[in-house]
Length: 316
Ligand SMILES: C[S@@+](CC[C@H](N)C(=O)[O-])C[C@H]1O[C@@H](n2cnc3c(N)ncnc32)[C@H](O)[C@@H]1O
Image (cartoon, rainbow, N blue to C red; front, side):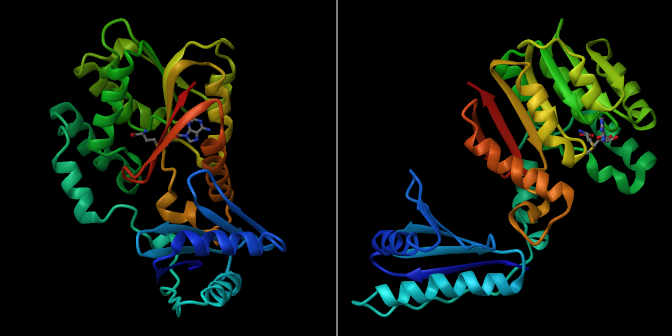
């Protein structure tokens, strides 16, 4: 539960933000970035991000446990109140929340978004239904219709001819990508499960894209490392084992043509990426990669709050 937010009403949000960062910067890590966002980080790693908004200073704190959260909340709030000599500031922190219980997109909004994107056609709908029958609980892994439509559109907009997918499952996203490629395009589709991927093949045939898809049953890293080490990939979709995302990203980026795009799924991990209390291998890998990509000068990146979070990284 170590995430918390406070909205501090004030007419001088920028001034307090700068004052606080400048003062705390003598003792601990405190910075202001180019967008004016302040960040205060304690030695424990507990962190508070300060955002100046019209009429308020927003404080957003994150820590590995409740005790460290209270500590960073206290440091920031105490100094703010002390700096405000001309007004009485009140810092009221919202009750701490668990990142794993955050809803990145409210279900009502998610439903509305789904209903206002191109719907799945009959082949995709039947593939989704078959996936539920055959894989049961695992069917949640499949991309949703709106995310599938996004993939098709990105492939089309890029005029992509060569695509790579890491994580096929029953082939829904593969079908969406292959459709966007058009005649003569190729999709290298990587997965370790012959059983799950077999489900998709009948639907790839029916959609008329089976001859564009080169399915490789092997650990994706082996498949990627065997590709020519030159920029030939137009678009890649990463949606497999989360702890390997950093390695997939690097192997693909070095083979991506300038202007090509890497699409990474599940970058929010159901809110766990935001919450330092989650420390398993996949949380650390995704959290680290999200930070890394945002600062990676080889790409321009946009993180979209589509479903469980989708990052687009376009090679410069
Ligand atoms: C989230 S599912 C992919 C869902 C798929 N994109 C879709 O829309 O239906 C993740 C897939 O990654 C595969 N996977 C896990 N580890 C892998 C690895 N090391 N190499 C290749 N595939 C892997 C799993 O077998 C599984 O099918």
